[in-house]
Length: 386
Image (tube, rainbow, N blue to C red; front, side, top):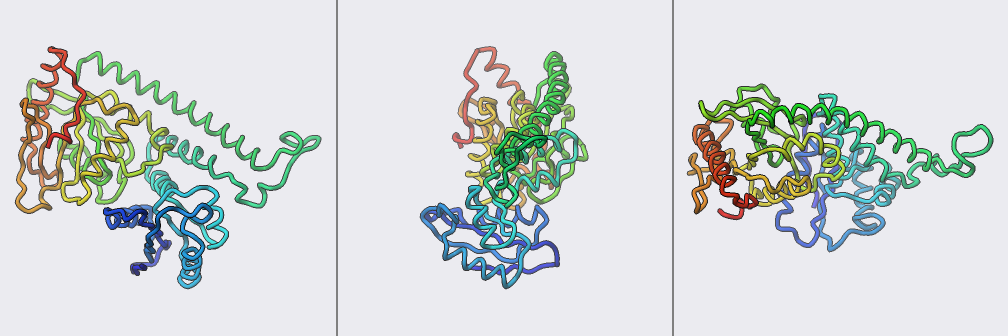
């Protein structure tokens, strides 16, 4: 199936999305691919979809589909071909050669978005580290100069050392340098965190799928001016503000980078220093786009990343945001059988339900304090209790 999408002139892209094993959420995956591509600044000129049982080893989509895409590329001349999948270096090299244009997979697309959005020194370093680590895996004799060998007296590298090996060593050196620069920033952040922990102030971290409304919620609660827009990965940098809930409760509220399905592991590793703000939180506000048809899967995707960074043990308060887009839903708190608040329904953009959210945060803090006093196990998964 080929869907034509029109719009203003800018860098254009064809999206390739393959439905493996009749995925019931395939349409939502395609919609997310379009949103990601547009978020990266491309105009989506066509979306090409197909059904397959498994990827082709050499071309991912098979020779027949590759020929079809080649004909389309020759007809409309897109700037890039974007796969809504992670493809191997060999597959990328083969497709590049046959299609005669840049091929981008899902990981590279997300990395490009992060590179364009990073604004702080730490964010820029983290993205560059992820990019260099990713590039290391793509050195598969993709360019002709990689096949030449260098050696001899007075030349860098030993006899017979390939350009690819030299490039790999150069990237490895750059990765080590980036890690050292990031380590300095992490040390400063840890010093600040230790000071906050000594003060006894409760730390609350906002997490959630990208574009669920985290930054809008953060701005509404703290009166901050964090950039918020209805697009994927609008913000990358962690921001922290003090939040006075009432005269007895003061917390430090942190906004974090959004998560997404199949978030590249190299990005998770590179952003670990930023995500540590989540690891050391006392409570997580897990923001969910209530209007999204695959919100349950998005909740699971976020929890997978939390598990990967070892933050899955932290008590969560689910924030079902954007209720203004759902008929008949009003702001309310959901409690467990033991009286613990586990979810709040609200609208951050419409300022609906914020008093209930403040109430739920206070009750969550008090509940956890009581649980600690009784040495109760705080490891639970509230999203399963609804």
